[in-house]
Image 1: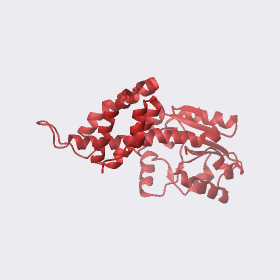
Image 2: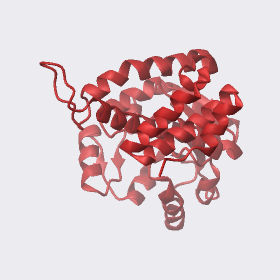
Image 3: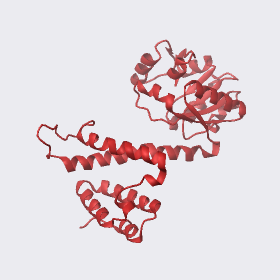
Image 4: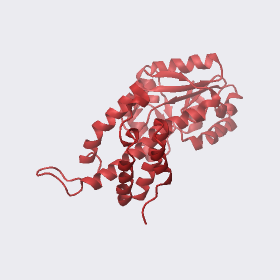
Length: 283
């Protein structure tokens, strides 16, 4: 976030970084900024960005409030998806302007993260119209799209993002494991081996399919659904479950749970729902 704001003319004078990895990242991404204690950064900031894990945010806010490090009128912005501005109340009570500005984006700690902010939506929550105007301006400066999220809807907003993003990774990893098992030791002449490392044959098989499925559902919604559950082919789904349980019963359990939710969305026939509700691996 600091790098994105620097690119559009803001000056990041200081950053608090503790671990070796975060200090190295700060030196690389914000080379003109000093690495300082958090209270020193807070005392000198006009805009203070709190970018810490959700479970650490309340403690940090409480500590800054207790030390009196944040001056009245300071813009205090956190990037937590699950929290609104209520968690900043100890600083708000001391005259700070609270902002919750969360980029709806996944980050890996690599250089491309900052560029991805330009295509991201940001969930913004503020205490009043002035706060919303400031939050909107900051997001627009970074090239993002501000989306207003009510204080009481922040948890639901964050749950939706976690469900879509985090669980997508889980589903794809399971699919890759099953596909590697299906393709192992069956390479064509001259083809690379099917290995466990990312970026191999299994990923190349799935990539176009996954990209098309994601594009289709974002443009067409439920009409994008294809496959045996949509077709009501319970015999094929049963064979899938039997095959997956041989690879890993946990993958089969995940397939069954998601297939049941798919059947509910698609309003599948009773035989499909009954299969998925009652299926268990043969003993």
